[in-house]
Length: 273
Image (cartoon, rainbow, N blue to C red; front, top):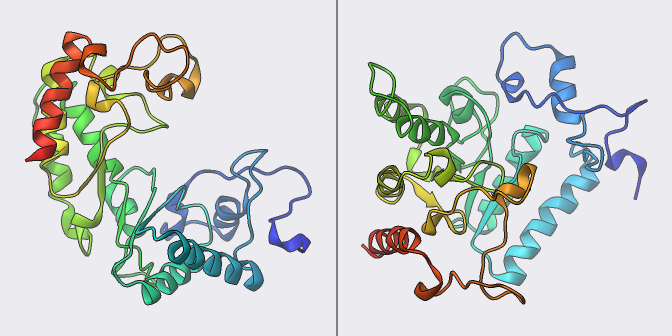
């Protein structure tokens, strides 16, 4: 509708991907501008959510989808990149209309204080985000580290303990979402070198720990990265079965090998508990 719906630069300018600038007391205005107004990639124009017309459109559109489709949750991708004051207004407007609606943001960051900053009820912050939870990357790092490293004072399984001990920085850590892998990361089975015992420990922790579990498809079968694909497609191979030309059907026990079936049976039993 107007040129200022998109952040414009004299030449292509990419974001720095440095989320800590939001809370860093030493960051410059220029650092924050590049982070929030730089484009995520050449094919992904960065929207100017300080524009009141665009902001209103986004809020109304989000409310419309909830009402029309009857959905009960939003996962907000790349949450740290837009203007944070707008994101707070957006979340507040949604929760005003739908108080029981679930929201969580993807915050691919390093360090619990940085991750928690994006959630609601944080002190020493000029505004409240109204965001109940985030993708718990800190626990993701800790779990994968614990299952691939020897025990030490702060290493191995102790990394999980030190991460969980920091839950006090959240208003409610149980609103976070814990995971072992996703579409952007190496599959859990490959991360642990396809060790079935380590797989069971990871799945056991995922399904019994203090937060909401997120399960990436075929993780229940302990599927490793694809050897046939490159880059991110290694993690996004189609689920075998139900597609024309598929030689195997992993939806059925008869289509799984012994290891896959053992992983699935373990996962299924815990999921039903």
